Image (cartoon, rainbow, N blue to C red; front, side):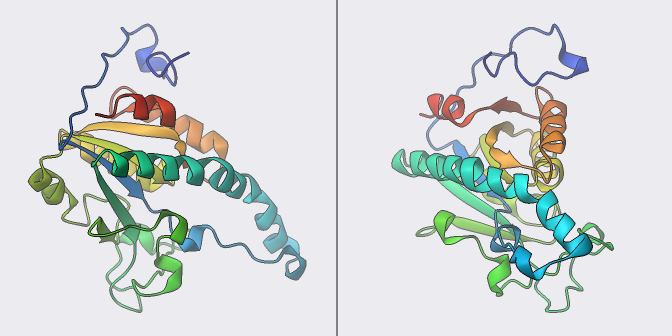
Length: 229
């Protein structure tokens, strides 16, 4: 099946196939969301035990997807956009205060979402395999949505962007929040399914289905590239 019939939720079962997007040079940008060093780090399992070791193994499928699928496909997207002279932008989570007092509530709740990533620390940086080059824009956010907590909407508007191709992590959190914000601001969004990941594949699949057709068109890397000008 193609992207036109895949990833359909209950709401769109039997709906007509969407039209091909018309992506124009100067109006199409790639947005890489929150692929940062902290999410790629792995402890030595020999030093772990109990619940810590259990969590290590629970996260193994995510790390496999990141290294085997998401990062290679994101690199492919970046290369295609750069080669075609299209804009590449990045969003990352990073607080401006060392103690994180400037973070939004969603990033300081107890548990996994309690993210303390000062902007100058290595953990908050974009990995070298995907690093921005030249004057590519990086926005720093303390929110899930890359629009809510930054001037990204203004940047995209000033650049003349109408279509945003999104990749990154986590599908069900910051990617979803950003995509919904973009859609609400009337940007036409493409989510590249095999360049995104969630903590569990089930969460990824469900969120992709939820976003598809209302907030974004969900495509594979190769499908998205086929529409690039």
